[in-house]
Length: 223
Image 1 (cartoon, rainbow, N blue to C red):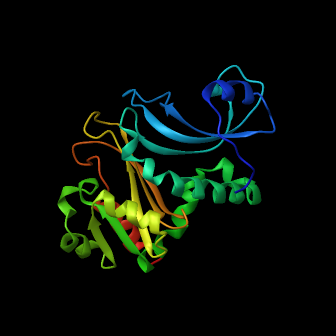
Image 2: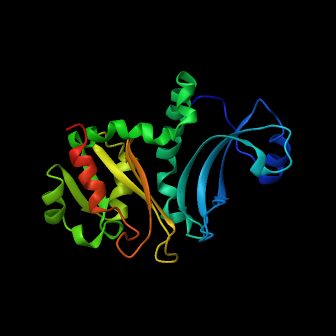
């Protein structure tokens, strides 16, 4: 709702992307130059148009990891509306505070971390570190409202716009790549507000999951 919008085919996009007054929301494969694992991810990208040679040259405004590259879109498609809500507010934020752009801007949202404790935290069991994969074990670290649910429940929370719900968006290699990044984002199911943003690399001690250490950070926030 920041600007008018229209849907384009890829062929139309190639031509329209030269317009410096237009912005574009699209999915792209992303890898990191210094990452020896050559891991690739699918990101949701928001960029400005311009006279550039390729898509990679467009000026990024913001991007969010959606999945490890190659995963079926069903794995994340139901979260796209929430991600767009976040991006809209994010653009408003960096427009008002351009100094955030020179920092790791998403870490700014960790200032909201303590607010999770006033909501209900919903986690998908197979996205949580096995040592804490029950509500009883989680509450030993995080003594607040938390539920372990399946992905269908997460979809329901998003579709109903549950203002009390904070959900986990976890992006990792799904067992395909040691040392690849695992992104962990806690996001409001109704408003797309980010409460927590972090990532780690998969090791023998740090699996492809939301970790006990993540819960400890949220429990200690603001204390």
